[in-house]
Image (cartoon, rainbow, N blue to C red; front, side, top):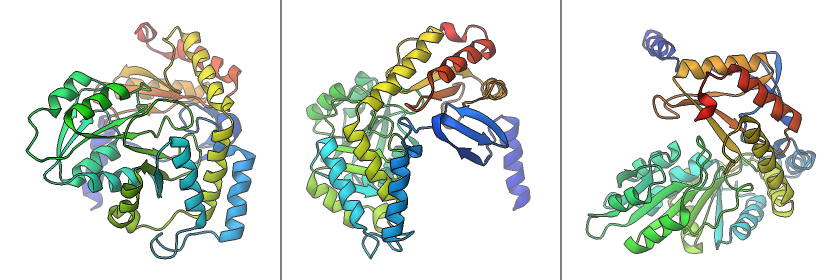
Length: 374
C-alpha cells in the first residue's frame, strides 16, 4: 500500500501538484504563524474578520458552557440544538425566503440537496466552474449533467434544448465564483429557467454577507465558514422543500449535528452581518485600494485572481511573497483548469490598509513581466 501511495505522490510532485499540511495559528488582521514564520495571510475566506471577533468568540464559549461541547447525535435523534432553529430563522429572513435548513458544511449542503431535487430521469445544467461539491451532488443524483461555458447564457440555452420528455431540469451556478471572483448573470439565467420550466439553485458561499445581489433563485445555498467566519452550511427555499430535506437529504439525516459552540458563534456572527453593513463596505473598499495600486480593473468581489499559468510559476511567486511576509496560496489543478494556476488573493475587513499596499508593492517586484498588463 505504501509503495502504491508513494508512486502517486511522486507523480504529483513531478507535476508540482503535491499538497501538504502546515499547522497555522491565526490572529487578528490576517496575522498568522505558519511553520514558525509570522506573516499576513491574504488567502483566507474570513472576509469580514468575524472569526477573530471578540463577540463571536465569546458567544462560542457561552454556548459550549450552556449546552456542552458536542451535539452527541444527528439532528433527527437528539442533536437538534435549539440554536439551529434560531439560526435558520435568522438566515431565512435575511435571504428573503420561506425557510432554511442548516447542514454540517457547505459541501454537505450541496451533496445532500441536489439529489433531492433531481434524479435519474432528470437533467442538471450547470456552469462549468461551479464548485466541486455542486459537481459531486449532480453526479450523485444520477441525473444527466450538461455543463455550460462559464457565465455564458447563450451556451446555457443550448444545453437546455432537446430535453428528455418529462425531465425536471435544475440549473446550478455560484453567485460569486470562488477562484475568479466574478459574479453570475443571475437575472438572465433565471429568465432562461422560466422559459424552459427549470429550477435554479445558487451557491452563495462567497457572496453571503459581502456581495448583495438580487438573487431570484428558488433554492439558495451558502456557508457559515466564509464571511460568517465559523463553520457549517445552509439551504434556503420554499418551506415544503426545506421540510423535505429533513427526510431525504442523506448528508443531513446521517450526520451528527453541529456543536453548540459553532452554532452560538454563527448566530452572533450572522447577527453582526445583519446589523453592521459597514463591514462589507470596508472590505470592498480595501479590495479596490489593492486593484488601484496594481492598475487592475475595479473588483466585483473580495477575490482578486492573478493568473500565472503553470503551477511552478505560481509556487515560485508564493515563496517569494512569503519571504516578504505575505501568505498567498498558489492555486493549482485540479482546483482550477490546467494551465490556469494562479494566486488567489482574498481580502478581509480586518486587513490593515498599509499591509494591503505593501502586498501590492511585493507583487510588483515578484510577478513575471507582463502579468499585470492582462
